[in-house]
Image 1 (cartoon, rainbow, N blue to C red):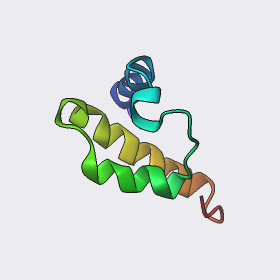
Image 2: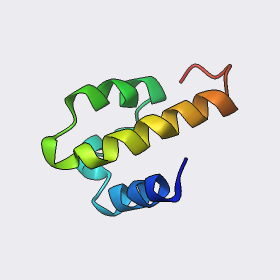
Image 3: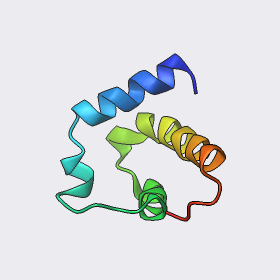
Image 4: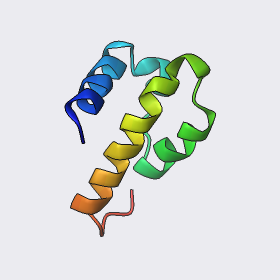
Amino acid sequence: MTLYQYEMLILLKLKSIIEFHGDVRQTKTQSQDKLDSFPKDMQIFKDPLQQLFSSLDALMPYQQN
């Protein structure tokens, strides 16, 4: 993961996670599925999030969600 991708994730958090998830917690799989319908104004965050999911899969290969 690059520094730019990390910074984009921080910016995403500042833009308000509640906008995407409300008060409901999601599994990793549910979050990945939502990337397919990401709003156009948030597309800049899609690649860093996909990289994050790939990194999580590499670090925790046996965890399902």
